[in-house]
Length: 269
Ligand SMILES: Cc1cc2nc3c(=O)[nH]c(=O)nc-3n(C[C@H](O)[C@H](O)[C@H](O)COP(=O)(O)O)c2cc1C
Image 1 (tube, rainbow, N blue to C red):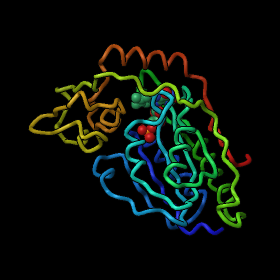
Image 2: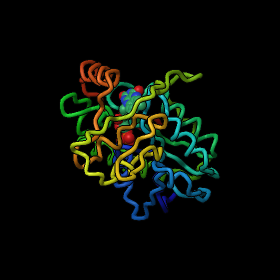
Image 3: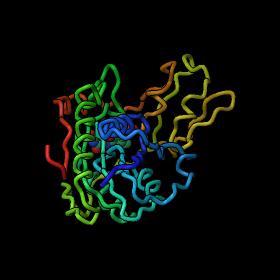
């Protein structure tokens, strides 16, 4: 089969999932690459046309060993008709647990034919300079692995006579899935002295939880702790000050410092 077009479908508040997907697409080498970015509420409202004979790469971060609830609800608007899909989760060097299996089951329900999966590592949403957790990842080694995966996907799909030739893709994980992001009503603090009210935080919030009205107002009940406002603030005015969030980041920094490597499923190394 020929890969005519690649579509990247993702939910990626701090951009690491997006970066992995882009590197895989670079390895596939098709010039026709379209982004369907479902991170922001307005992106989520756009209705994607049904997929058919393109190759779709679907990516999401891991939250509590599962898919983020908002990624699931946004992916659920997608429809596919026997469309080949590559499934990617990106996690912060702790564990991906049931997230990739959950993504595979969701993709099958939507009409995709998953042919390969991967779990990559991205800088943890809660990481800071003082409490690093996989900082800077995906780094050049990860990017090389993503590009290599893209090249192998291309070779595999080119050799396929038809999508029906696929065998079932085996993905590790438990069903019923366990875990999930813990429910916490908390949002990043605002350093009033540093904030320039530029509005960047409001523009990157996947939940539209931040409004600018002379000052920055955050609706704490909506916050999913994705940390996009922190990582994108040009003035460093958004920070985690909550004691439980600091405890979690300290635990991750102390217990998840050994470098994990990307894992690929359904395609030989
Ligand atoms: C609420 C929440 C829960 C998370 N849970 C996990 C987890 O269970 N395991 C892990 O390794 N990383 C976890 N992470 C880290 C993200 O998976 C990681 O930072 C990922 O690279 C973020 O993707 P993005 O840049 O596309 O937003 C969590 C992040 C958040 C915000």
